[in-house]
Image (cartoon, rainbow, N blue to C red):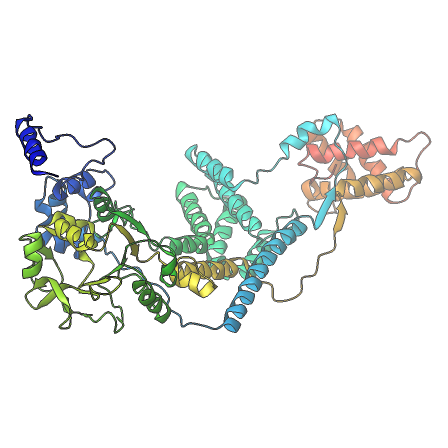
Length: 639
């Protein structure tokens, strides 16, 4: 440009009006992230962080140390934490145990194949045992079948009267209702019936019409000796009430009722114990259902970093596959499990690009290329953590408060970032800045900056932001869930922390087999046995008498039986004459003496084999004699 042209351009610029700077963001630009304090308030405003909204939230002993450092004073972000810090009684009710896993040695391919085979056999045997149990149970229920002839319309009312209640719960309710009405004898019988039905359902006894209380008691002694004593007391009380001549009182019923309930409760004791094993890790209703949103969790830290512009997520794949990841920064938490393979993969990953590795506490055996190690110390008094001189120039004066006393031991080429009295709290090592890539390894003495409660203290949130931002904004957290996808059952149990659950399941199976029993031999199916109703045998016998026209013989049997029963009731022995017996029966029944005498004579003649007179009606005579028995005191169930 020539001198005249340059002078002309300067003149135009001087004469042009001044353009004010733009005050609005250009179209498409993202809004700036909130300040750290504002981001913390937004995070803990969420209702899932109960410790900030529930004054009765129970804190553990470890979480109470955050209170001692002043976390409860941040009432703007977490208003209810101050009250929770004062709840010492609730703190004693809860002890938060660190999750543990079963650590097993690495095994080779043959051992893994053997484990898979054993696991498959175990599952197959369990399924086979369950299927066989239910099939055998159905077969046992159908072993004895009774074929009963169809009842006619006249038998409907009698069948309804003979219906027997078999539901245990309804029997117990009926017993309580009858006891409330003052019918203690029947109430005691219902309670005993409920006990028998429960024992029948468990396969201990088998209720049949010919079985007696002694038979049931012997079955209980053989199958369940632990309840035989109480069962015998119940049987004695019930038989005394049913066959004794004393009145049954409320006290007697209460004794039977208490023993029956005790036996029923003992029958389900094993199942209750098994259920208790599955609830050992419960918190008894205390509001700590979500560990990640507790003061010891990390959900708040992840949300805070997200509001500050970071992209944070949990790593599920193994650290050995880190080369397939596109993240800038990997954070190793104490729960991450790393072996030689994982550390070698990390070394290759660090050498292939500009990556950052953050080791946040834990008992990791750090390799030589890290160059630093974590020294554990017991908990000390509250001691502030401050930036080093170089970090203070970049970040300004900060103060970090954490409850533990660990520190980082570093070499001459490592640069401390945060210091405490007895040593560095955070130190980093960078690769040669003249090389192709610049990598960064940051080691923290512990992981307390990654706890939810830490964000409420001093400048902890600001310090965490500065420490991570130097390594990039795309972050993966490697912790308890890392390596969740396993290649063998041992890894599944180990990485999934399923050891306690597997032990509880094994204990439940053992209790189930102890409760139900296990078969140690080849099962033999029981043959199906069919039997007829007793009424069919009576009808068949009657048909034989009818075909043989043996009415006289039938009358002889019935007459002999009737005369013996009537002599027992009226004659006081066989010496009394037949006429005297007829008079006694006539007096009792109101019948004419001559009619009763005729019936008795015909019965006697038939029993002695005297031929019947012409036109005799032996079957009608037998029916009349049966009515005499019923009118004089019952037929003994014979009709």
